[in-house]
Length: 176
Image 1 (cartoon, rainbow, N blue to C red):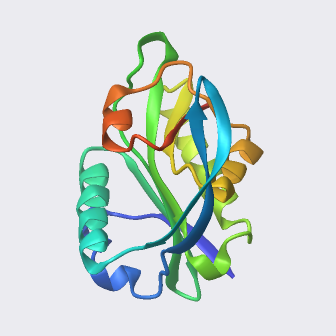
Image 2 (image 1 turned 120 degrees about the vertical axis):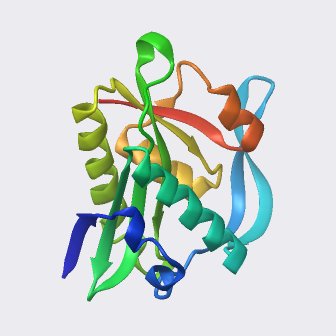
Image 3 (image 1 turned 180 degrees about the horizontal axis):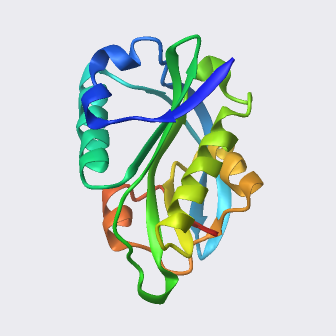
């Protein structure tokens, strides 16, 4: 049985992620060439280190203490997915809130957890005054299929901070 709930900053620690597997074997990614999106071979393994988890925990704690959303999925008491949305509207009339992370443990991808987490983020963002979710998303073909399948489209206004931080990410939005 899957249980969903918000997480507080006090709960966010390395032990929480002990049963979480962040691994993705990427073979193809979307790249913008000449104003068009094309699929390119870009093989690599995305596997988080202990340092990556420490950075993640620090970011999620900041999200929680600054009034954002950190929402998680648990299977048999073990963390198997999470989503975060930052507090603070941006993008002028677009009234974006930033969906800063969404991840599902490798063994449960395709189980519906990601969609349920996205729906929780969507509901929270709408209740907190957003018109759209902004997503700076990994360009892997599988990741983009997930977001496009939910109805995400290219962002009307791209956030410079996100592009500078992750130049290969696809900048997306979801109208609430």
